[in-house]
Length: 116
Image (tube, rainbow, N blue to C red):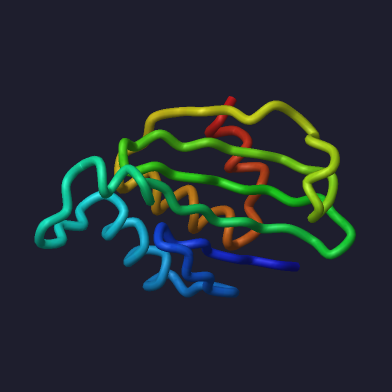
C-alpha cells in the first residue's frame, strides 16, 4: 500500500505518523505567520492524504483551510479513471484528523460512510 501526506506548502511525507497528520491539520486550520494575509494562506490553502495500492484503487482526502473536505476514489494511481465523483463536506479540525487517521489505516469503508 501507499500512504502519502501532501502538506499545504508541498512537502510530502510517506507513511505519516499520527503526530505528522495532527501537525498538518493544526497548521492547516490555525497557522498564523507574521505578515501573512488570508489571501496568502488561500494560495496554499489545502493539504491532502492519499492511500492506495500499486495496482489500484487509490483514495484521497483533500482538506482546505476553510474546512471543506473532498473525498476522491480512483481506479489507479495515475488518476485515469475516477471510480465515483468526488464528495465534498465541511469538517471541523477534529473530524479532519479523524478522517485522515481512518484513511491512513486503510479504513476506506468508514471514510466512504462519512462522505455518503
